[in-house]
Amino acid sequence: MILEVVEDVSNGKLLRCLKLLQADDVLLIEAASRSYRHQLGFLKLVLMTGLDGACLRLHVWDRLVNPVEDIHSHCADFMSRVVLGRLEENAFELAGGETHALFRYHFDVDAGHSVAVKGGLTGICLRESRTVFQGEAYIKHAFDLHSVGNVVPGTVTVSAWGARNGEALVLKPLDAEPEDCAAASGMPVEQMRAMLANIKERLLHT
Image (cartoon, rainbow, N blue to C red):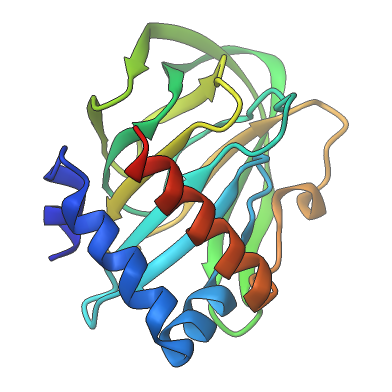
């Protein structure tokens, strides 16, 4: 079900998911409790979760000026499709050097946010850069290093995530601290409701 929503380029299944959340306050409250503004700058809306730890997300770049995103890997494999807008996806690999502070992080369920520890200094090398247009998708494995940039304001992606299976990396400026890698879960229900309504309307008029 979760992967099918991402694979459906007509967005019909995504629209049904949004309508379901709008019609059920219990589901909406649960989704809001899982959602928050990610430390990378976008709004992370976790629409549904599976018993196996998989989840369906919307990422929304709602700011007129988006911050430069840190290079990072993930705790799970995922497939993402651009629903509205456009972005640039950059792939990297670690290299010799001391240009970035490296942090290892994992999601602490009890704390409700990611917990990071310093992992020293590293260099980085860009392997590939590509523009992902509306309707296009890409797949990343948990340990792939990447960043997203040149995002058109208002861009929305839908993504299917597997269960978390380990720690991830994030590369930050040399003066960064572990606290800079964390963001607490939880979003006001009315903010969640408004975001879903806005996205649904934009989809219906695309």
